[in-house]
Length: 210
Image 1 (cartoon, one colour):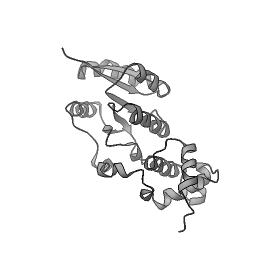
Image 2 (cartoon, rainbow, N blue to C red):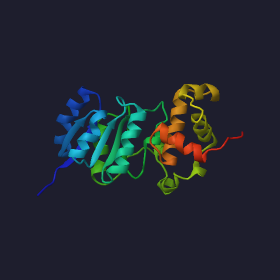
Image 3 (cartoon, rainbow, N blue to C red):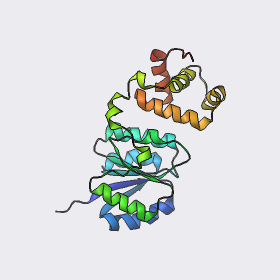
Image 4 (cartoon, rainbow, N blue to C red):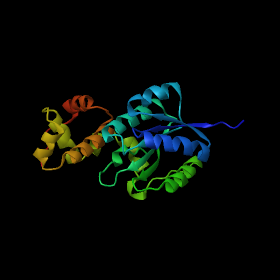
C-alpha cells in the first residue's frame, strides 16, 4: 500500500500556508501540516514528518536556528528545507549537510521550488554551490580550534555581559554581523543558547590577543 509522506511548513504567512496546502498535496502526494514557529515542536511530537520546510521570510534567523537544532537533536529522521533564503544576509550557519536537503533563495519561482522538491523526493539535495558546507568537516565542528579569531572575540565579549549591539560597536561591525558570528560559533561548540555559550566560554575562551 502506498504510504503518504508527512511534510510540515513552518511559517507565519497564512497566505503562503493556504497556497501550499492546496498545491503541494496534489503535486507531491504528501500530507502537509502547517505550523507557526512557536508550536512546531508540539506538532512534531504528535505527528512525525519526513520533511520540515522553513519559510525564512517570516521567521527570525535566530529562532530558525533554534528550531533546526531541535530537529537535529531529537528527530534524526527528519530533514529540512529552507525557502525564501536571504541573499543579503549570511545565513549559511543554518545549513547542516546531515539534515538540510534544500535551500531556495527569495527569488525562486514556485515552479523552481517544485522541481527542486521533486529532486529531493528522488533522494537528491538541492543546495546552491555557494552555500554548500563541507560535510567532511562537520564532525570536527565542536573543536575549539575551528573557531576563528573573531568568533573567539565575540564569545569573550559575552563574558562581560555585552549585548550584540555593544559588541558590534566595540568591533566596528554591524549587529547582524555579530549575530552571524554567534550562530556559527554556537554550532561549532555545540550549544544552542546565549547562556550555554557563556558557560562554555568561561571554561574554554581566554583573552584573544590580536
